[in-house]
Amino acid sequence: MKDKAAKSPRSKSLKPPSGKGGVTNPRAQSLAELAYVAIRNQILRGELPFGIAIARRKLAESLNISVPPVTEALQRLERDGLVESKPRVGTRVRIPTREDVEDRSFLREALETQAARLFAERATPEEKKELCQMGARVDQLYAAGEESAHDKEFLFSVNTYHMKLHLFIADRARCPSLRDAIEREQVLIFNWLYDTAVKRRVLGSDFHTRLTEVLAHGTPEKAGEAMRAHIRHGLQEVLSGLDRMSQLESGWRHKKSS
Image (cartoon, rainbow, N blue to C red; front, side):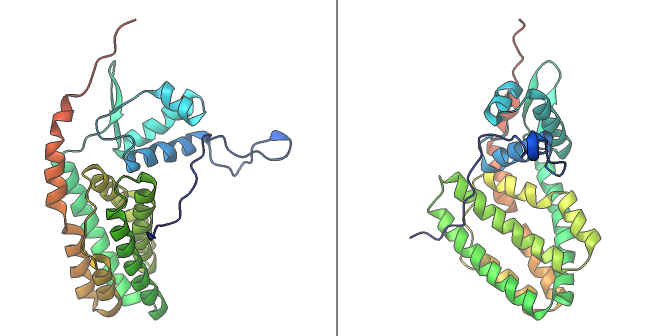
């Protein structure tokens, strides 16, 4: 039996929960926030691949909400750099350039290398033990993912757990500003997106085990070096994959006048 991460059922409706008498719970997420997460997850799953046009009305219908929250969500995704729009043309999932990928990789390297150094210095023995267990678990999930290449929901859960591992390191580095920067700059989200787009799933059987062992037992300097090598691994593969997709850049189509 394949070792798979737990799957979450996908809701057909994004309507937020209501309180008594049908009054919306003020703590519930707004429809725009829910739409943002749902659309972003479709992009991360590869259901909305690079270059594909996004029809707002159809997207709203599939999410069972009105168009305005979808429009607001897409505006936020455009600010994030995940989608792009052209006047009188439309909106599509943004196709990153080589410079985009390299810039994100350099930024991720700077932030996460420092997080690794601080983790090695500040994490407790219990936290270091937990990180090693997470590293082994990630390797198991990636190995199972090689046999489930067409199961987008499973691959989504693998990537979710992988991101959880990296955020665990940032959290236990005990530097809130650094942790906030990693989340705000979305370096882990973009790494996930690029890997999904070029279908980069094959890693060494102990790729994350080796990383976490160094962070748990090595010096801060060794931890930083290990994280830098970890982040640089596969960068050229991603860049080559994006080069093969470059022909999509001409995929904009003008809307027909009514």
